[in-house]
Amino acid sequence: MTCAVETKGLIKIFRNRWTGKEVRAVDGISLNVEHGSTFGLLGPNGAGKTTFVKLLLSCAHPTAGRAMIFGRDSRESEARRPAGYLPENHRFPTYMTGHGMLDFYGALSGMDATALRKRIPELLATVGLAEWGAVRLGKYSKGMLQRVGLAQALMHAPSLLVLDEPTDGVDPIGRRQIRDILQSLEQQGVTIFLNSHLLAEVELFCRDVAIIHRGKVALEGRVKDLTAGSGYRVEAESVPERLQKELRTKAKSVAERNGHIEFLFGSRDEANQALDLLRAGGCAIETMARTSSTLEDVFVKTVNEQ
Amino acid sequence: MNSKTGIVTWALVRDTFREAFARKIFWGFFGCSTALILFFIFIMKIDVVEGAVATVSLFGNTTRGHDVQRLVRQAHAGIAAFLYTAGMFLAVFASAGLIPTVFEPGRIELLLSKPVERYHILLGRYLGNVLVIAANVFYLVLGVWIIFGVKTAVWTPGFLWSSVIIVFVYSVLLTVVLLIAVVWESAVVATMVAFAIMFMSPILAQQSLLERLLTSEWSRNTIRVLYYALPKIFDLGRLARALVLGDPVIDWMPVWSSALFGLVTLSGSLYAFGRRDY
View 1 (cartoon, helix red, strand yellow):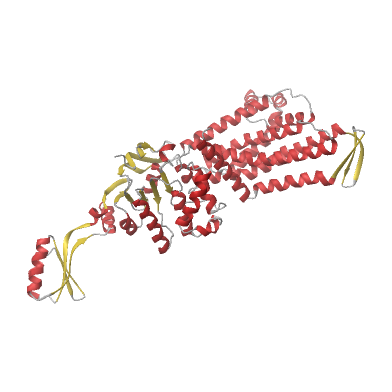
View 2 (cartoon, one colour):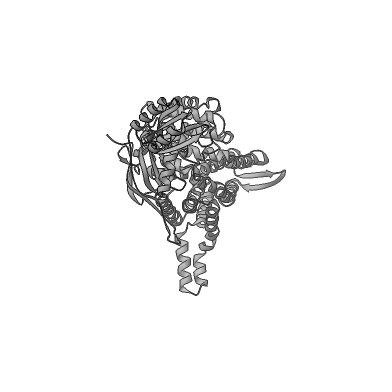
């Protein structure tokens, strides 16, 4: 099956014209994003995320390697037809109205007047700006600009949506609204490529992620696999001293918190044995759960290890 | 041209007009043109006597005994000269800003991500700019031509041709603005270079005189190269005047050599734009 996004050994080196100094912004990234998936691209500031997106959409030329959209080299203009894009720090012309802006970018995507007339009111309503279509973008708040920007990216009903920090500056209600729109697009089979530093948002929404650091892919995989823990947590109350000592020898770690004792065991069997002992000792069991990491834990660990 | 190409070109042209409207560039020119047209409608009175001799009244001062044909041609030439000099400066100055705005970060990425070739984006913007100025020049020239025609029954087409020359020269100068905007993204530098070419043109037009005055062969060659390489704004002005006055045009070299300069500069802009990273 053709991937929505495929890059092979993508390299981008920026050279200072005067000093000759080189910066490898993207250093041999090979990534595959399956059609219909929700993909999050993560990385610390300056990791090369935005450069990667620019290479993908042909805003910049790769020094080496290729970027493909649905199997076609993204440098071909037709390859970009199935893609919708919302850039980071966009500057939509403030002289345009919301309606005019959608009309302009829709036309650039090859939509004719009839299609534009039908699509623009629909999308303005979808992003909650139905009443604002005739107002100049200069009067829009940042959150409204993000939402109209999202509408712009959706104008030609793309099969691939590339969003660079889409909820930047959007209030919590607007964020929820954007997330709802993206979820409905995901259900329609649209591939969503999210470039964001909001890890919680990516964790909540994306199925797959890649963490890039210093221009290279440091880690990639399914979010649920990456955040799955490797142990079991047992939390109990009123644990006698003798039992505490016994369980300490078996547990990987022990922590005391608000009168509760939390044991971390390496396997399910060990955790079950501990539960039996605790019950036999008349202790109150508070929690027994598989441990998991947040995407933030994974991110910090990955970046620090590099 | 297929329908998608047409849709994109029309969108880019419309966007330039929209920006020109929003920045009051279009309306500024339109207002000046309208004021000039109204001036000729209401202030200047021409009474033609026996079909050939006219009485001209301007702000109440009357002069008699003009040859109508000559009078109209002189008036046309004066307006064309005004448009060619002051109008051209204003046009370059006002519209130079319309090109670099496209390259602003956050705006250009979105344009480039669309299924449109880079050359198409640049040419669309260029065409939009030329049409903004052309619309105003044609409006003014056609308006004045009709007023003079109605008042004097003299319908010389030369004046209309001068508007074509004016738009042509503007479109050549705009290629310089375009190249500088692509390379340096600076409206100020673009305007300065375009103005420098305009200022140098009358000097370079005295090429044969300069060659006689200069002693060094190197200097003579430099003048010669500059004269032939740069657009011949001054010579084209003389050509426009000859067209207006109905004089024969002896040499069309300024037209084709300036067109060649424009083509080379435009190709350079397209090449630079195609290679740039944003």
